[in-house]
Amino acid sequence: MSTIQKHKAWNLPNAISLLRILTAPVLILFLLSPDKETSFIAAIIFAIAALTDWLDGYLARRMDVETTFGKFLDPLADKLLIATCLVMLIPLGRVPAWMAAVIIGREIAVTGLRGMASLEGVVIAAGSLGKYKTAFQIASVIALIMHYRLLGIDFHALGIVILWVALVFTLWSGIDYFVKFLRKAAINE
Image (cartoon, rainbow, N blue to C red; front, side, top):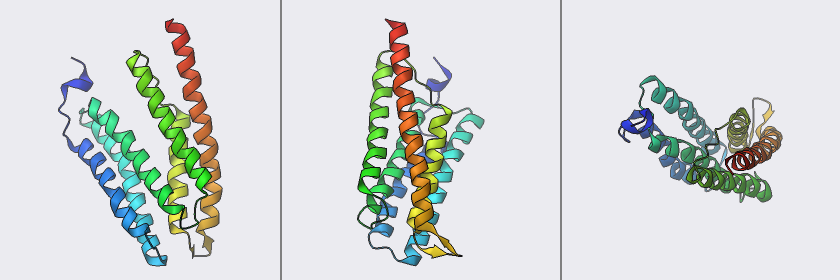
């Protein structure tokens, strides 16, 4: 039995991932009709939830409680949190719908590809491009939730610039996943 499978699914890191998923409905409530205060609170909640992504991974490795369930739950929580916020920001005019569609579509496509690859016994490890993608997505969503001018910073304009960078990394890392899959599939034939 592998190290990953021997641990029980319910442990502290997985509970943190689950809490991150449960943050999505809270953010929806704050983003239904946000003003300056609720936008600021929502940005803080999102930022804290995003930081737990690092925390659950760190704890899983440190406590030696990595699980197959955790390896599924952690990226699901990230994708759900970011997708929820992007969708909620569209009707507020803070995110262009096409950008949200491209980002969310890429996430669905790569998740499907990784699932299909795993059925074939092919492991496509997350690379540094995916980490940059996630970091820029998180930074852009925080700024776009903030939206208003604060301390002389136009958070909406800043968020749009960062979102463009996130979009480039999103597409680049998505293409990278497909290229890796095709190479590994060709080797396995």
